Length: 235
Image (cartoon, rainbow, N blue to C red; front, side, top):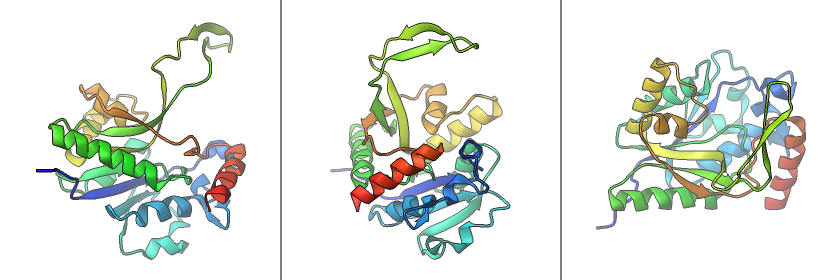
């Protein structure tokens, strides 16, 4: 019998303020090709046929989301996010049954392709079939020479790039496992940089799935211009 994911929910942590952009509004609401960044992100997730619901974790004082056309979509649910990314993801996970799968994606990654979501789903279903549901994340192999610096900005060493990857999103895990591991990591004060790190802390070994290079995160002003180019090319 072929096993498949029956209940797939996307969680979008969007409670941050994006201070590195230097903008007056949170970066997910900056305009990008005629709509806010988060609008592009939600369009991909809401329109994917395998995703049954999209949960967006918002800042308690968010004044922008309700004005988006996506805000009234029947598949969308809003929850109150927290101070850190992990708090916001955990707020979304509390809405899911244990057996669901959670697909966590950055609000500020607007160039996501359906094909990359499909690759993650296929990997997770292969794990289900094998009885080893460890989860998976999109990632890109490191291509450049990597340097480690000291606190003054001087090079201390060249780091071997073999088997090094840039972690991307989405990241896909069983809801119960991710909820339990995130909760434990937060209680212990661990540094949770992404969902996979919470799984790793407690013995998990998520699979790396090679993703597209244009799945960039908008963090600095130059990223906004690059994302606009990628989206124009997609359309």
